[in-house]
Image (cartoon, rainbow, N blue to C red; front, side, top):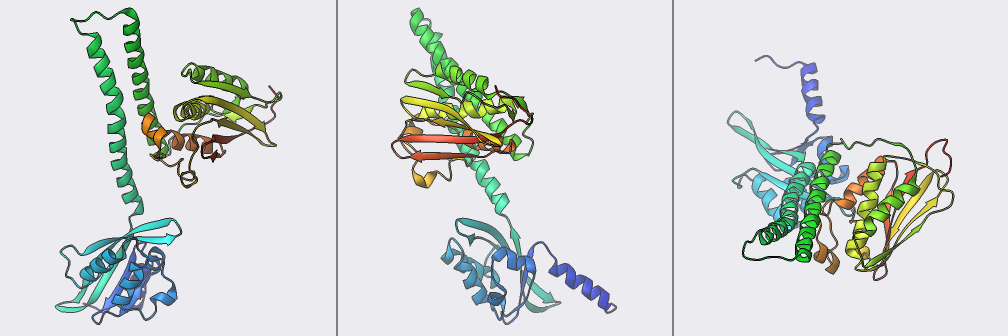
Length: 363
């Protein structure tokens, strides 16, 4: 074979250096001889930490950054020394406070014919794949649990109504049918939430914005939700001059229904207040309850998919853990933001902003 030209050598060298996957190479004395920029970025090591780095030192520096140091240390050394049955290992590395990255490290022997020159390590960021796998597992567990309860209820009451050996009075039949209807609505809500979340994940959430009046929308949703509870009373506090907003009315109705529905579910009784405040370029809508409140450690997580606060209220009412995540996506699609203010034992207030319509008049 002809010797490669300088241009060919430079091309191959540049290609290896420019790989989007990380590459690290150790010689037969376990001394590091090469690493590319992607490896440095993936592993979060500084240039100084890479310098004069042998394999054991490199493994130790990764282990102390990992969420399971002892496991990572043992498995990495095993694959580097060709003692592992599968020459790969996944590392969960802490790259920032409360932030981690999952990196798949696959080792291969570097040979020149029969002569072994060293070992290479290919590194790939698999965080998104593993997060997606975890979400799928969580989705299956959540959906199977949440669907089973209303389905069992519908089946049980329908079977009871169909019994030939019992004559149910009209009031009892009405109660059974009401429960069946409520559980059917719950199933519909779960399915709609799953469909919305799939659209959000695919970047296909449809938002049809138009200048709209908030006052009537809020009153319509509040009147509808008032029919769902006898343990709460509603206060609607809207300013006299409430400007139109640039929204998709159907989607904002969905957000309001979810927030008020949560207030009904998680606050056993008391006042629910829906209010608006007008700012220069937006309107802030708020929904307040008098429930147990949200513990401080959970307030930054409640808008995540499938997350639910673990307390007596959530265990009592259940839920898919998707409503607030969907609401956040809808509000952000309107160039707004959503957040929660809460005091443990005194209730919660959810607020979200909506942009004012251009050249609008007041309602």
